[in-house]
Length: 77
Figure 1 (cartoon, rainbow, N blue to C red):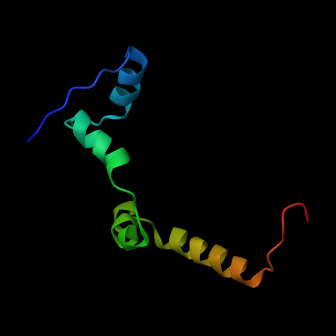
Figure 2 (cartoon, rainbow, N blue to C red):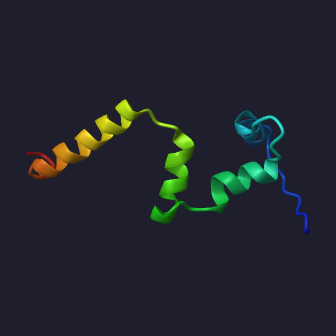
């Protein structure tokens, strides 16, 4: 594994340190936040990690249905 050293000012370091979970490396944090862009293909995995209740899923479904039944409006209408 190749290792690179970067310089961070104290404010940037503290911002990263606040986001880091116990046991997580700074490299893992940076890769998690900036390395991979989520796509639609990632949705099932992301949704499974959310552990949403049936009531929440029903509410989301109702919002989607309501938007589909409502005509779109342009800005300023």
